[in-house]
Image (cartoon, rainbow, N blue to C red; front, side):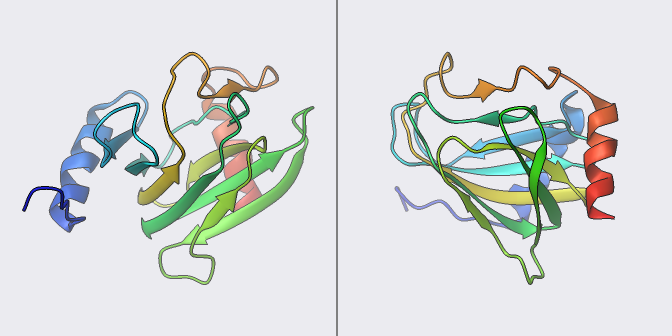
Amino acid sequence: MQGIQLITTELFAEVEAKAAASPRLRMNHNFHSGPEDNPHRMLNVLLRGTYVRPHRHVTPAKSEAFLPLTGRVGIVCFDDDGTVTGTYLLDAAGPGRGIDLAPGIWHTVLALSDVSVCYEVKPGPWEPASDKDFAAWAPAESAELVREWEALFS
């Protein structure tokens, strides 16, 4: 039926295959119809080793929610200097089932299982030039930082 999108294991497999083919080791599947929609709803498939550069949403201020549907993810939050201020383990099997981040919180997301599928919601619209404020203290790509941050959950 038009206007209804099911979240299925088949969809997980399709997006996982795209993530495996991506050098970034992650892929999203949008449920919203375009960048102007509000809110944005998507699946994010994260494979172990993916690097999500620490960022925050300030222009405009946007909250962000993550709910793992499969696997385990770690959320690491930072202060303005890059010091870790909190670590949050989210697991589809519980007890930490999701997180809602207020606007302006520096954060990254780590895949702590081989495959993690998260449902993400944040306000639209999406403007590529201002969607994310990337942390100047974190490089664009860093497998070394991924390993360092994963160790916070060991």
